[in-house]
Image (tube, rainbow, N blue to C red; front, side, top):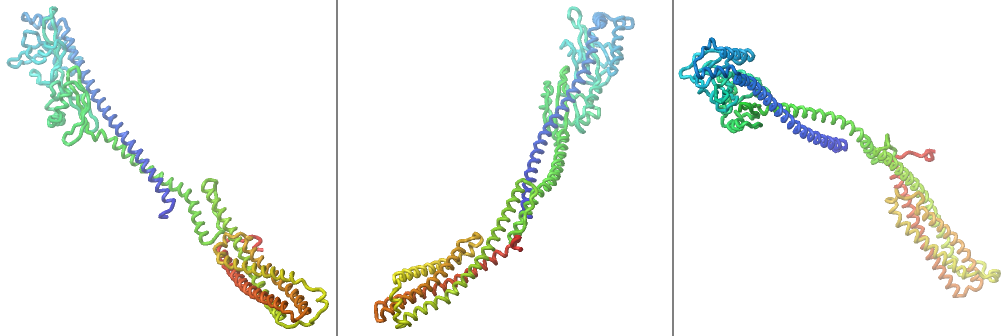
Length: 573
């Protein structure tokens, strides 16, 4: 199992799937983090813009009251009176109308407590309430008066502590003029900073994010005695070096986002201008809180990837086992075949590539089984042929010495019984035909000898080539041919013996003292002895070859019998 295809396939697929899932998760996490950060930034910016719009709308609504007072004709008439002469306030109609306008504004705007008008060339105010003026108090020298007179339109002051009410306020003031364009005075309303501070305090992004507002001079708009100022605004002043560059952009009315480090914490600073008054609202949000949702998304993605990997691992394990199970079965079959069992067959359940492999394996096993069956059959036939050849050679070894011995005895005699047979003299035998038979017999002996030599050289190769030999091999045919030629040789020897006796009788009948015939017969005798020796040697070698053939056939049969194959019906019968 340590090097199984199932394990390797499982490892490869899981590795590719893991890398793919991790890659997709990293890409998705990066993209989601980028999107979440952008959405969080957009949300924070939208909140800051919304707060800026609310504050701007609040200031415009409250400042519009000062502008409305600056357009009031009774106020114009009253300012012209007090500018040129003393006025009895208790009985002056214009003064009463002005007071009525003041009360109307206060009743409609509950957060406005002080509404007043300062007439040119006077040092006092005319408001909805009376105050004890500080020493050397001159209304025309106040910042709100001078700013309105200088700008000639509705203006807002920086937050300050009113010397009359001792409240932290912002004054909205608007100038008004006579028909010749001469300044008659300035109408103003005091807007409490606490109301705007509360709107700023309500801006929360995340758990620790907070907002602040700066005036046109870069000073925070917040009551120094409030907890809000103590908690947040003081931290801005403690990081003055970091905030200076951002303050310069905020005071110029820019809008944007920056990343700053305050007290070793990275924060995003979003700022947006309050264009009508030249102020700017800033929102500070820790980077970790912006990225918290992205981190949660990353954790969720990681858990999803782990769960997906577990599910995919289970699915892949099941699928790979279905794929590799037939392969493991094929491996088990091949191990049994390796041990010589050719009766096994693979189970084929489909027509896919594995099914085709199973069919090919079964076909190969059938082919090998048929080949082994042919080898066994050929071994049996070779054994039978070897036995037959050995018997034939044994008979030849018994017959040929007797024939040659008789021929030698006939040649060695001086006379043959029944000398002078007149019938034989009248019918002389054909010596030339006898000599031709002798030559043919000699040629046949040499052919048998050479064939025996060739068979002897072929025998050692039978064991190696036995599985590939066909059923009707050439070796079997050669052995049969050799046996047939040996039988023909025996018959030719007997025929030559008969012819020789006829010739011998004829020669003895012609004359025993004829030296030429005797010499001829001696030569024939020598040839017969030589042929007999060749015949005996060939017969001996053929017998040895037949023994080796039997031995090789037995070895081949034992080798083929070591394989397990199914028996045919013919063999079982």
